[in-house]
Image: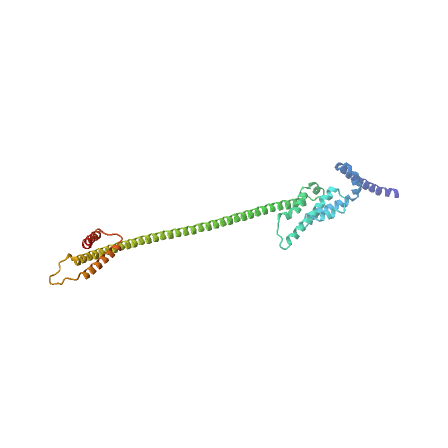
Length: 320
C-alpha cells in the first residue's frame, strides 16, 4: 500500500530530474555549437546557475526599460555569474561608459573648464562598442537599451559635428576679422605713406616756391644793381665830361690870359708900361699853372693838344 502511494511521487521526481537534465544536456549541446574547445569546462562551471541567471536577465530587462536605468547595473548584476570572457568584456563596456560619463560631467563642472569635443572621445568610444554588440544584447535581452545607446551615440556624433561646424565658422569668422584687421592696418599704413608723400610733395613745392622767389629776388637785385651801376657809370661819365669841360675852359682861359699878358692884346696909351719883371713873373705863374694842369691829365683832348702846341710855340718865340 505504501509502495503504491510512493510510486507516483517518485515518478514525478524522476520526471522532473529528467527534464532538468534534458535542459542541462541541451545547454551543453548549445555550448558545443558555440565553441567545442571550451564547451565542457564552461558547462561544468555554469550549468547550475542557469535558472538564477535567467531570473537576473529578466530583471535586468525590466529595469533597463526605464529612463532612470543605471548603466553600471549590467556589470554589477552579471558579475555574480560565470560568463564567457567576451560577454564579461562587453558587460564591462557599460561600466567603463558609466565611468567616462561621470568623468565628463566632473570636467564640465570644474570652474573655468571649457567644452572641447576631445572630452567626449572616451565616452564615444565605449558607446560605439556597445552599439555594435548585437549578439550580447540579444543574448541578455537588452536590445531596447542598446537602441537607446545607439541613439545617444549618434546624437553625440551629430552634436560634435554641429559644434565643429560652429567652431569652424567661428574660426573662419575670426580669420576673416583678422584678415580685415590686416587690410585695415595695411590701409592705415598706405594712408600714412600717402600722407607722408603728400607732406613731402608740399615741402618740395614750398622749397621750389622759395627757390623761385629767391631767384626772382636775386634777379631783381641784380637788375637793380646793374641799373645802379649804370647810373653810377653814367654819373661818372657825366662828371668826367663836366670835369673835362671845366679843365678845357680853365686851360683856354689860362691860355687867353697868358696870351694877353705876353703882348697878344693892345695896351691903352694912357696906361703906363708895366715893368718887365712883374710881367715875367705873371707869365711864369701862368705857365706853371698851365703845365700843372697838363701834368694832371691822363689824356688830352684835341683842343688841349692844340692849346699846348700854341703855348709851346709862344714860349719858344719869346724865350728862344
